[in-house]
Amino acid sequence: MIKLKLSDLLGKHKMTQKALAEKTGIRPGTVSKMYYEEIKRIDITHLDSICELFGCQLSDLIEYIPNDGSDSVKR
Image 1 (cartoon, rainbow, N blue to C red):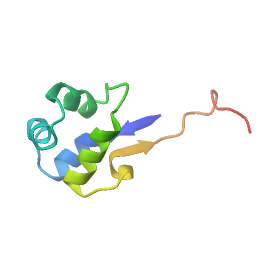
Image 2: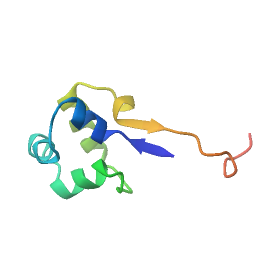
Image 3: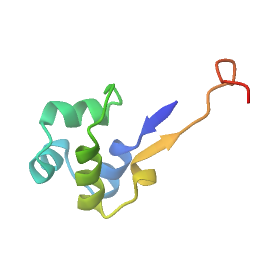
Image 4: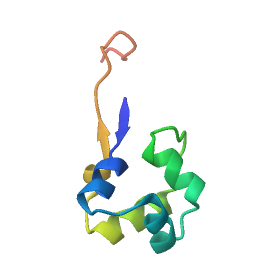
């Protein structure tokens, strides 16, 4: 499972979704979907803009959490 930690970053920096959209040029609807982890695809330029704004690494924004393993490919 992929977890977006945008809500954590916004809270840490005391920034609203609206302010993020204004500062990065990302549509407010897209920011909202990212915030609530409802987005299916993320534009790499959006990730770049957010990391640049917060001075963070991609790992501060996205986290991989292994699934229970039942669907994983055996190697």
